[in-house]
Image 1 (cartoon, helix red, strand yellow):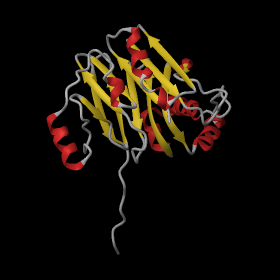
Image 2 (cartoon, helix red, strand yellow):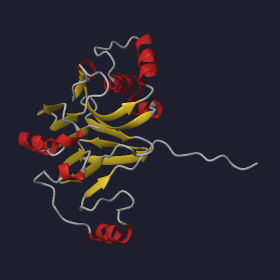
Image 3 (spheres, one colour):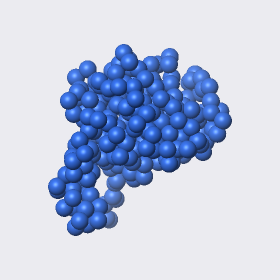
Length: 229
């Protein structure tokens, strides 16, 4: 379990530390920040070391491609993907990092790369050349990812309380969500208990285009049920 956070748009440097500071319990082994002032993007990570114990620091770059990533989870088929990528000329600097596999796979296949993944994951990539943030959540929704967007700003986090650390996010309870929680003891669908904060659904990706301030989400996988004979 790790914690990922980020914000795009006008923000103060200290806001990121507030966000990942409340996620220390998700990643006590290491923490990191990436600030791209020109692109108005800040990424943060709290790490629980499981794979590539000596390396794997995040946010992790692939600077030759203008990419940075924050990632929570494990890619089960990362060794197979790595061998495939190495065979076509990708050069890896880490020993076992599945995070670096995600970067190289995105560089070669773009957003379609998510369809190649077998694992439990939530990740966000800053694609500086294309001026966007691209993120995804695993098909079963094992790893959480919360989104917020308002007034030309966009933010994401592994837990909603990290978003509440931003001074631009209102701490207002959504009446419909409160009704659902009192009725079912959970909030169904993509909503959270907080106004303006929602979950990326399982098996979905998002794209946030920073110049236009546009957020899109789409499903990349749906279960298939064989028809009866």
